[in-house]
Length: 164
Image 1 (cartoon, rainbow, N blue to C red):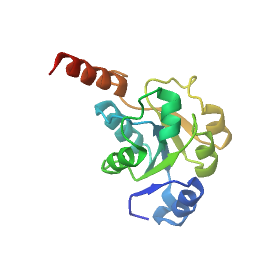
Image 2: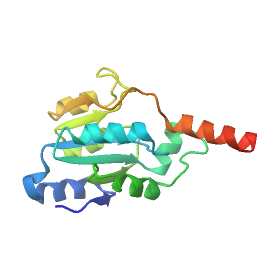
Image 3: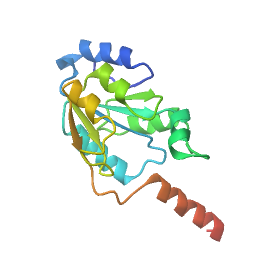
């Protein structure tokens, strides 16, 4: 399987990965909202991709993004966020999922590595027990948490208020 794709069903993606060249291993899973794509996201995903042969990005759907981030979010719908992620050379597949965590995705895909950003530690990753249960290693990837979509949005809103 050499085409990059958007998926909405983890089971279908899992079956496709098992049929693909090299059976898609080692498989790395990264996840997040990616509401306003910024350099911190790119660095996180590039480092995650370097940990394996195939990078799947689990993307929070619009409802779970709203639940996690609050009113007014997401700024961009999941389809647009997915298209931006798939435009990155390091991303092989995007799976849109609902829910606050990727526990179900981990159980279905059984990745070799679950990469989380530097806003987490090995002890604070919500899915760490699920990952451990399926034999998946949890890795913290990316540069220090100096960037955020929320900060970008505050900057944009501040510029709008100043008439810039």
